[in-house]
Length: 187
Image (cartoon, rainbow, N blue to C red):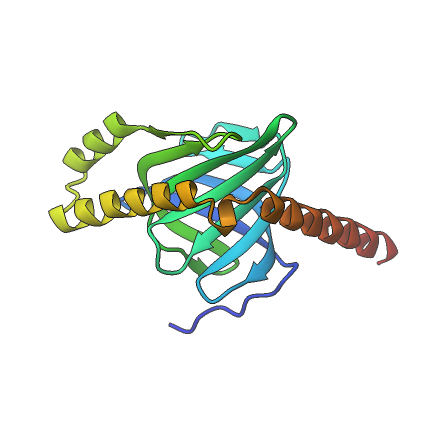
């Protein structure tokens, strides 16, 4: 299958699946801000989220999202009033089909606080899904290794965990969002 051509400034949807191929959660919008060799960077704000049971809600704050081509995680930098928080999902590398970013969510999450401290979340959910969805030992090893890699990136304050980088991309997102609104008014 040919890879979809990516466009800076284009709006994409996000679909998160579980290991059994069932949709877990979807986001109505993420604007592509940058393309690197290893990952894509998106921005969104007040985006409608639909849960697998049909419930909906909207994100509250601006966010910068990193989706990786070869890493088994994604990172969301949330720009809150009292600092930047990060929500990191242990997840398969992304694919893009028909304007939608798709990945498999593997339950384990890492919450990083503005002071750099962090907490691993949802270990019980991971253990439960590993059993009922029959995660292989190889997959289990990959996911735990990627969690360790993610924690190391946090400790090193790597690029995506750098406040200035998140603020730069959030500013870029706001500029793009404003430009799209102005273009829509004039057409």
